[in-house]
Length: 401
Figure 1 (cartoon, rainbow, N blue to C red):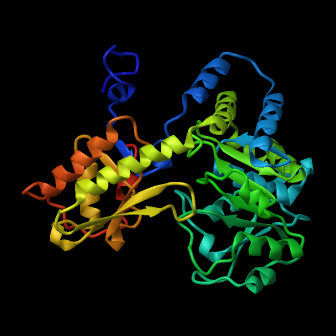
Figure 2: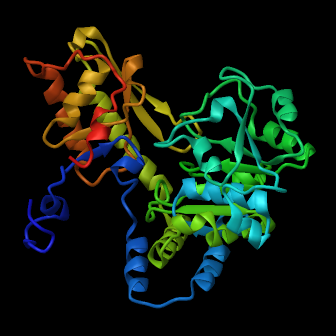
Figure 3: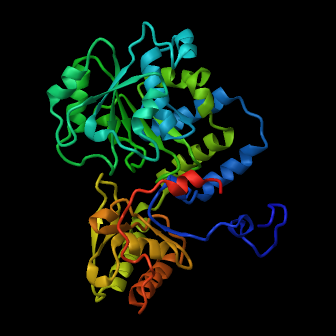
């Protein structure tokens, strides 16, 4: 592999670093780089990179933009949504007690230190979500069961040690039988407990506060298409307490001036974005892929809406034995192709995967359609075409080899 300094005028950075030129039809996934950063954010990051700034003042400027777009009283930018959750939980525990902030996470004497969450919301987004609370020194208290949570499950989980409650909005959560956000907030607020919402992958920047949440955490690098970052917004007292965690556990989560400026620019670009035009392009890609799969034995496809009501659709691809593939095998074959096509494969054990159109460069929708037909109409199948979906950590444990 060439060193970074051995650059050629006709090579891309991926080529220089020896990285595969993947096409992402999986979605706004952190493991794939999250999103394509909008030009406005790239420009803001480049402009501020050589400048000195007073970081608290930069965050004050960010607060005004975050508040305007979300309807919160205040806000700030942090390293990512996971760090935003940790900071919000820690802030609910310590308030503005600077000594308590320095004592976290191991010394919680005299503090409320429990966080209630519905059991069906304890998801893994690359790390277990409850760990974001535990990093702050909190104890996570699950409420309800995987299949159902009643209001009394949450009510009885709250006691004099409860600092906050966490509500998760994600396609990974159990999508039925859980309390709605309104029900969850009503139950928690009746006991004087603030509600933190993890809305990392959500388009809607305003409704969660409007529906009762006290503090909401968004990703700045997913649908907003900013640099890797998290956005914390909501009640000023809770936001202030969360921000002060930069003097404690969040020191390890600090965000640079470039990411703050880039996220601010991405937020402002969001106000002006041609959302309808983007939706039309995404729909065109979905229809192209659906048409490419028609008539192929053992393959079905349908366009389905996002499960958390984001304004986007995906193509669900059903893989039956007649195709001489399993869903896991077909996903692997596409990922091994040239170019590699990375699908949304978190449900392959159920016999299907998804194609997400929200991260395409111009011309890539057509390439994906060609790859689908080429793999599925080839006479020969790869050796692992019929492989079963398995959880295998071996590759993870080999890094960096």
